[in-house]
Each structure stands twice: as C-alpha cells, then as structure tokens.
Length: 461
Image (cartoon, rainbow, N blue to C red; front, side):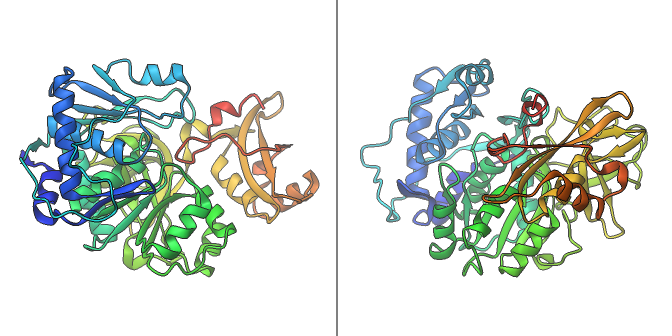
C-alpha cells in the first residue's frame, strides 16, 4: 500500500503550524518540508538512491530532523547513529551505509531560522510504500552488543495510530523529547508528530532544569521519560505541571514508590512497555486510566496482540512467562517461525489484559534452584529513601549456583549500610531473593541514552 508522504501531507494541511521547536530555533511544517526537499536533492546529488542506507550522525535538533525527513522523502533508509558513542562503535553502526551525514545538510537560503511560523506554501509531494524499509534502528545493547532492526513505513504508521488511540492526539499537542534520536523512543516522537501534524519539542539531551522549565512554562502536553529522568524531575521540584496531560514513562521498570511520588506531585504518568523490534510502544496505560494504581504497563496498543508463553516455547499461554507480541508494528524480520515476536522479556497478563513486566529471561538469576527477577529486587532497593540507584546481578557461587548481588548508589549525604539494606529487603522479599552481597558505588550506574541499565558493563564490578 502506498500513502502520501507524512511531511508533505502535514505541510499541505497545516503549513504555518509549528512542526519542530528546539532551543536553537523552530520550523513550521512548510519550512521543514522545504528544508527536507533541499536535503533530499543534496542526498541524491551525493549518490544516495532509494533503498540505500544513509547514516545520520547528528545530535537531536533541526539538522537531524531535516536529514531524517530528507531520507524519507527520497525513499532512502535512515540509520540514526548515537553521536555520543565511541568512534569505533559509530563506525560499526554505520558500516553498511552508502553515505554518513556528520554535518548538517544545506538549508535553502530563503529558509528562516526564526521561531515564528511561516505561511509559505509547501512545494512538491512524495509517497511512502508501507512495505518498504524506512529505518534501521539499533537495540539498546544492555546485555550484549546492539543489533540492527529494520522498521518499515507501515510499522511506523501503525505505531503512531496505536499510540494516538491510547493517549489521544489533540491538534495542540506539544510532545517533548529529551531522548536520543538513535533510540526508537526518541525518534518516534518526530515521526508521530509529523503523521499527526502536531509539534515536537526536541532537546539535544536531558537537562533536568531545562525540562522542568519547559514543563512549567512552555505548554508541554506530553513528555517521554524513563524512571531515572522522572525521578530527577521530581527531585528538582516538578509538581502539577499546568499543561501536561501525560508523562509517558518506560524503558525499564518503574518502582511503585516513584509512581506514588509522581501521583502525590500531580504528575500524570502513563506506564508503557515497548522495544525496538515493535517500533517502540507495545502496551500503554491509556489516557482514561492514568492515575489508576492497578494499571501497570497497560493493555496492548490498538491492533497489537500480546500473549504469555509460560514455557518460552510452543503454543502461547496465559501464565507467567515470556512476553510474545504480534501485529503491524512488529518489524518484518523479527517474528519467529510461529509468527510471534519472542521478546525475551518476562511478564504476566491480568484478567483485563494489563501487562506486568517482570524482567528479561536472560537476566533471571537462578539461586538455589529458585528464579529471582533483578527488576523486582532493584525496585525494593530503590524504594529505600537513602538509595538513589540499584543494580542486581547474579554472581557465581559454589553453594547457590548463583548468588544475588546488589550494586547500590546512595543518595547524597546518606549513610545507609549493608545491615539496614538487608533488613529492608527481608521485609519485602522472600529470603532467597535478598541479596547475599552488597557493593556501594560512588558514581551513577552506567546506562544507555534511553536510561536502561548497561548490565554488561556492571558484571566486573
């Protein structure tokens, strides 16, 4: 199926509406389309052809958005690359690209860079084949090296529609992202905003004070966060943001204590579970259920199916086990021969189809023959008022096979010790889940740009 190009459609319908707002400037949809068309012509002159890959090694902002939409208009496969990654890693991620963009594309001379919207009419049009590959995104690489995932235009469109059904998409939407554009969670905000002809507000990186100011004063209606950034905003004093209707929070577990803090501060949190292979969101707490403490990671998106395989193999079931996903958001190459995307994540579904995520099967610790979810233990540790962060891993042990080991970062000026933490855990966990060893870390734990723990970097600590 072929559809009108999203950016061309948005520019035709709302040419003067603000498409993209950044700290360095803003573009209307007419301006963004003109910049993208100029960028597409430049890419073509540099040898890029439909179906070839172009790596975008630019920070989030106007230049990144221009390059992304230029690729989509030309039918080139965009490959976002994290500019903060080491040079060797950037080279590996871009190795199959015909062209690497590490400098901004040219902008038309008449293209204004002011914050004011333009009424200039859009020129030209293009189309998207929903079966064609639009993007190559690399997974977070929390437990192993990042893997490349090819996402189609259809994946992106269905993901945007499913998100809009769950969260709504009012015409005045201002969706704030301070996440890497190399991660599907941040990139999807640019694409969904173009599909809906609404405004994406993009910060190059997460800065708590800058995001806090935007939430208080700049009419932000939706923001994408992870647990650590939500906590930092609450620590900075976020309370009752005047325009915010949803703080979409995912990328890993969110402790119950943190959710309680957010509710007390009047911050409307919608928990979401997703992954790169499903073009970001899989399940999301819908707008009417925000604030309901029973709504953990929410029901599946529109036209997405989620089942639980209790054995990790065979026919899907309903007991606790591996989370399986099916639907039009799943990358074409991701499903197993049985037609399901086997996520490697563990969870349960309640009678209303709400998902509770319990961790990754590859991270499960088997101690004395008992399964221990690191996420569960981390949530208990991070509920302690003196703990800022925690990571739980399995360590080889001659008696237990694996022993539960915790790496803990204390809050500033806190003096909590091992005895207190062990007692705290014992009050909430079965004895075999209580860490047998505690290690205190002075600095923040290593995380991906999207906020996930880099467990592979913690194993030697």
